[in-house]
Image (cartoon, rainbow, N blue to C red; front, side, top):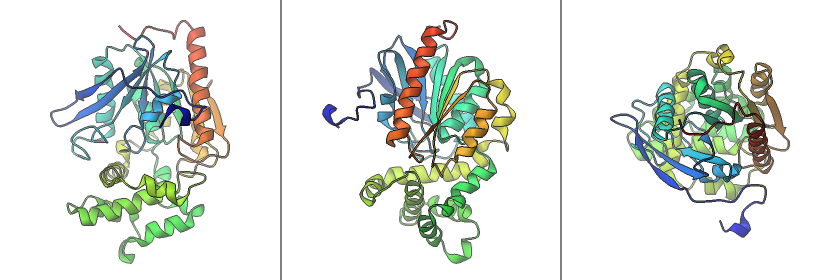
Length: 333
């Protein structure tokens, strides 16, 4: 995208000043990139999915003269290797990877920024390492409870009955009583001619429900990369069948470990994937948090009204860090 075509409500795009791979186990290595000001306040950006990988435009939510922005492809996603590998791939491993990356980059504390599944990982990481977190900016809150997982598989049909029906009808009638198990068996199949059509059906359903307004050309464009489609579907369903490797209500039950830290929530008012009620519950459990509903918006961070509110959130956090000397710390030890 040329600079003249870049949305004015986002900060300009830039190239990373550093990128590379970090080996986090004998099997996995994760890709990361650093943007902005190397001496700035560090912020780790956590993508959704699980399995979506980074969108390089996510660094455009930040004033890169102030922030040291770090993008990370979580285990087995996008540029991380081995791609779509489910061995040693769980929430606790992802939390450990974040700590390894923080130490590798010689960062004392960082702001944690994440949306959808990225909000889940942000909160669980914070609860595991609260003294390493400056604060949070989160979007599309997902607390990984059974009711929220069920919403993804069945609840969205209340608003998107046509998309859900197509998603349901892809599965043989005898297996439609458990869509999660049926899709798991298909997308994990070693034969691509079986796995890929199922992954495409799953991702078409998910993406069809992600935007307040979606057109066919936009949807078709998002479904062009077969490798990424299969990787996202496999990773998400792997986590879903394992309850996202968390105990029921684990995040809210441990909220006192982090609810003294700054939090800004940006929530699409008409988000049907991660419902506004969940964001409101987190807000009510977090004294001093700020909840902003992005009007005329669904789930995607790149919807105009959500993107605008995310930029406002990073600017508000920047201002508070400048004012509050206790939080304004050098990124290095």
